[in-house]
Amino acid sequence: MSTASFQSEQQSPAVETYLLGQIGWRRCLELQQRLIAQIGDRDDGQIALLLCEHPPVITIGRGGSPGEVATESRLVRNRQIEVRWVNRGGGCLVHCPGQLAIYPVVPLRWHGFSVGEYLQRLLAALTETLDDLGIRGHTPPGQYGIWGRTGQLAALGVAVRNWVTYYGAFLNVCPTMGLFRLVEIDCRQEGRMSCLVAERRGRAKMTAVRAALVRHVTAALGCDRYHLYTGHPWLRHGQRRSEI
Image (cartoon, rainbow, N blue to C red; front, side, top):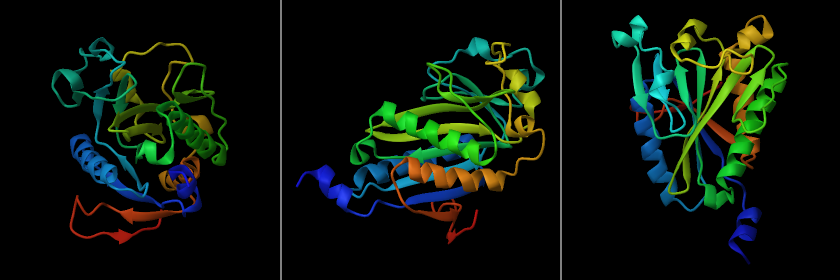
């Protein structure tokens, strides 16, 4: 029996989902790096999913440029908002409370995913999450993000180390949109950043977004169940199962 056939007959692994609340960018990256090593050493296809929000920070991915950052801004000039180069795909992004950061740590080879297929699965999970919220999103050809009628709602920025994924996607739920002016982007409709509150012209609850997202990421990655935890034991002592 082939490895793939044997794995398909096994129960799929649960997606271990950690609700981290607001956490600093560097601390979250350190957690992802530890998970990469742990999951890469396992032989059961375990997936970890980190959901969090970050204090204000600007990250520049492999496709970005420092010229995109509004360096004349007082926040940037006085270093009140950090600017960091990061080893992920995608360009220059603003992160802040109200934006949901979505970090699946997935062993691609165990699950039989190419990098391209993984990206498409992650996009599908985001699109279906928006569908649940009554938002019709689309991805323009050649792009890796989700756009609505008001502008870009989500961006992808993925990295892979030893065939294990980290970083992931960023969904604007209810952030302070003025911060997004710190990154210079095309002023066309397709280029503007927007959020779910603007798209819905009303409230968008982070808890509802997280609940839909966990379900759809789990299904998109070929798993049939997930476990939820508040925090992570490597960040603080103890953990408990949680409700979204």
